[in-house]
Image (cartoon, rainbow over all chains, first blue to last red):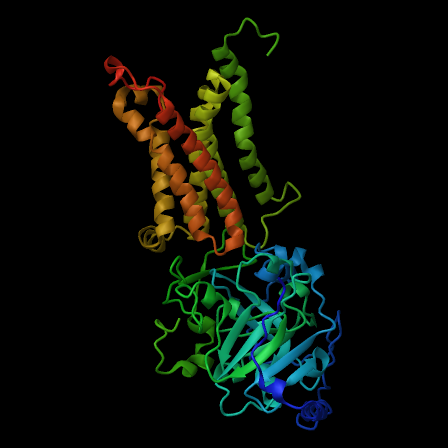
Length: 316
Length: 224
């Protein structure tokens, strides 16, 4: 039986069409540079493939040498495209990153469904070379290209009830063959507190090495939260929702004793089945030593204050 | 084997069978060693340490299961000479599991013993894997005929722990799997293990009760 369960009624369902059409004009206005007079860098266009053009360098980038394109695009987790590390690259062709739209809903003044182009265009693309620490205790350095999530969020004018932001990956078994297996409760869901989402380190990535983000890395648009374990950085996003309550998140739903909502990189709090004190750097030689894992993946200076007074052992 | 009529079965196993089986058992090791040096056109991937660890671990488990399959195969086929390969296969199981552990100890943990001891003590799947390794090494160390003779009855008791090794090995693999779809491979090993142990249980239960004067006689064939 294929009776579709009705989704929860969202504020956008109640919003008259004329309203959100006018909201789209607001967004279009932003695209024209009204709210973001980024003087010297032109508004980003988002090609389907190839180079992203001028990309601003960021002082938030690490100086460490990035992993190779090969490492980053052939060794990663993206269960929607298979559970093996090389499966996402092999199954990348199934995913069609155009046309692509993103639905924004919940506690915000501007909600609705937006095309990926309109979504990214108003903002300035930046290169962010970040450390990436997987919960499985391996790590990479990745030169992402993206937009600060805060810039994107501001355009939707979340209201005072917006305490959390949640994200959803595309659910489509044709494009994501891994979803034919109930490895997780699809679609993949992730969430952040609004403070985490607004933090300058948090970005929506649309590129890698100055090029359009490859499908296996979460095209056309994925989250990157560098001080959290990689699974928080949800890929191929089609939904963004502002909420008052903490949203359910996929790995936490699947194994709540192993994966918390926060999932901050923390060498002092082990995974129940393995140590998080050290990590293996991908791309290093066979004889390279493990590197010690740093608190908040080395971003403690910037983000530790977000968690003042929070017991990180309990809120792992 | 036509043309070798003058040879006994024992000689054929010793001079033809064993060298062939030995070489076959060594092929996976040679393959990965050559791959590590880039001589097979393949490489160890982005995470070579993980590749090696998984490779040797899987091989070790497969050899344990092959060793456990020898006796049931012998009973089903009636080929008594199959038993003559059992020790070699068991030794290869110990060899590959040792490699698995050495990759973890040397390449992954860089011979820093603190975290290794912590892993063995604190992480149940490593505890059971390590236990299986110790049992395999104990069996390997006592695998000579001289040791067998010297240990008498206790030899059989020790070598019966190969059943425990099979269970621990599958369990060790099963426990570190992250999600439902990755369970496919350990499920296959579990199925094979259940079949191999189930056959033994079936034969034991189906066997007619021994007559009283034989009741205490040790099984002359060793582990069944």
